[in-house]
Image 1 (cartoon, one colour):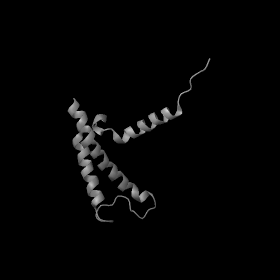
Image 2: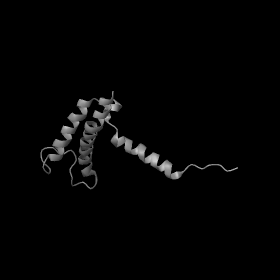
Image 3: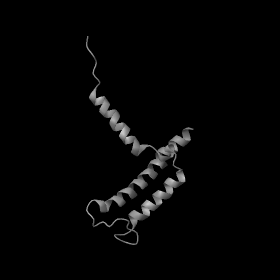
Image 4: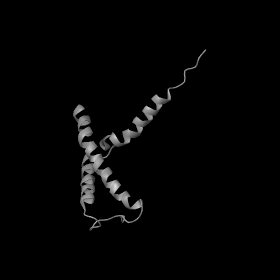
Length: 95
């Protein structure tokens, strides 16, 4: 009698899909108001477009590695707004 072993490649695909779901699922499906997502994205865009070490700088960029985390967070805010705009609209239209 042979016992079937789970296919490691299939499990890896499911794991990657689950992890990518965090970045590709609209935040409105998780209970965040749509208006809040867009407001935060506007703040993120203003922060990114802020030239150099201008008026707004949460963490100085001259700190190694840590200095770029605030820009990364700003890009994530913009990313989630884009996901909300394109994917969230699909979910709202299907209801």
